[in-house]
Image (cartoon, rainbow, N blue to C red):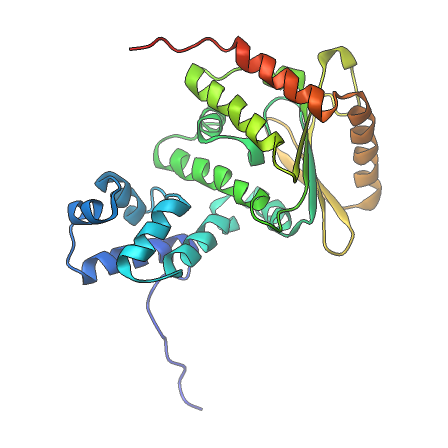
Length: 280
């Protein structure tokens, strides 16, 4: 039996393969980072971070690189695999992330922070920094979290309902500009046909999920899984009875929430209360 040949010695890990390909393409053309920046129109420091794996960049810059190198779709495909790779998340979240990518419908309750699918980069960075992340690891975790927003984009994006406690919207970020951007992002999201945002007023009182954030995921086989989370740990729940109990609590809360139009007005009021940044 002939010996199996190794095709390449390149990384089989999506993020590593993406960065290797970026370095290979630039090296083969004898370009410096400054040459590349001049040719593509982005800052050289961004390409340095992308080639070292500190950041994956965004779809626009990756598309521009594909066009510049004459590799239509190659880098975008590798980038999509890297962004979606569950290994970039801590092991305890990987099972959930795999289900999230396959879900045909999602609904969430946020008790203390906004759902990751609706977080801006600035919001995610502050939340993750509070959890102890710093430096390169913080950069990678921010990118991993905000990269999940791709789940809600495109023609086949699943419907997503976010039920947000009023206290979440009354807890601003330290940076006024970042908080304004986050509220504006929520308003933009609420205009998309597959996203529904509802605010649960504080006047609703105590309820069945008073200390628990939860995400429900409806899967292709018709089953629903739930992922509960607090400040210290998360748990993937797939047992039908437990999921049903959580869903009943969620439904009771949704009955008390502001409707989508009223919720949008509430977020607008929060945005109007954000102080303007002083002009320079």
